[in-house]
Amino acid sequence: MLDYYGSITMRQDEIDEIIRKYFASQMNQSAIMTMIDKYRRLEFIEPVYSVSGWHMFHYKTVLDLLQDDIIIKKRKVEQFMKFVYSAEKNYNIPHDLYEMIYENY
Image 1 (cartoon, rainbow, N blue to C red):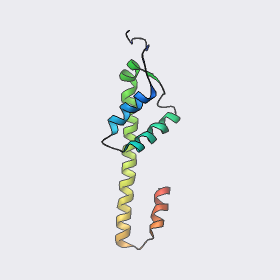
Image 2: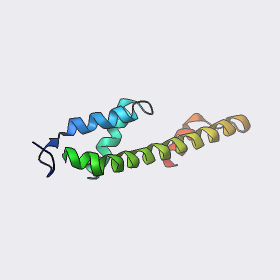
Image 3: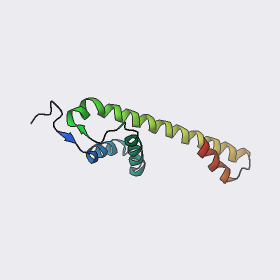
Image 4: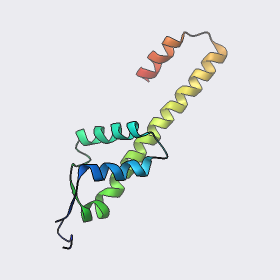
């Protein structure tokens, strides 16, 4: 049967597996699943897609959104690490304070 009208669907675990494989080299599995769950709660990632709909329309959109989220998180961590490095070199700040700053950053 052809999937012209969206008659063949992909299950949630199939979609998750595609996303996990795509980002496997960039993040660990638990972080990827956390992001997937976050965007599923926000209803940006649907629980079910038709195979044709996923490959034609949603695949790139979902992966681009997740990639943007990863880039933002990496920048935040890099900036914080630079801050910690310079603060360690120049000031004697307790490590608990770093944690508080990171959580509120």
